[in-house]
Length: 201
Image (cartoon, rainbow, N blue to C red):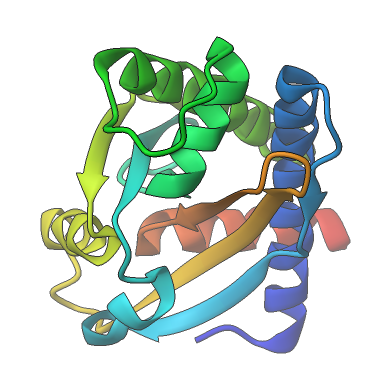
């Protein structure tokens, strides 16, 4: 589906976007955020659950709009225990064994908005186009269930594989782990690859 040159170009694109998102989170928490180089996987739709984990988590979901074919998504995935530590750090709370509240949910939407806007700004600047996030939606559930819902809403009738970009962000100070997933639909992926290939000419 992707040759090695296309995969390398996409990985670099994801690397730039994720680095900006990590810097934004680092500024919000006033701590160092470590980032893994984006991992690109071409995944059979039926096996997506193997790549997104199966512990309860919060997913802040954005549809990508702008000068690309609509339908692709960016997802901020944070396991529930990291959500508590993250919002505690943001809201000045300390209790670790607690249920998530409306205040946690509002903080997650705001954090997601800021990080994903930074991610899309950086990638769009590289491609010299406009990429904007839709208003976010928040799901607190098993992550594979949320991914399956997104895939079911897409037109994958002609394809049985999807491309997933996964970047891990973590703060040792607060013991926070999170992942950014870029989930382009096929038309958006083709457009991005074409733009990257033109850049490399």
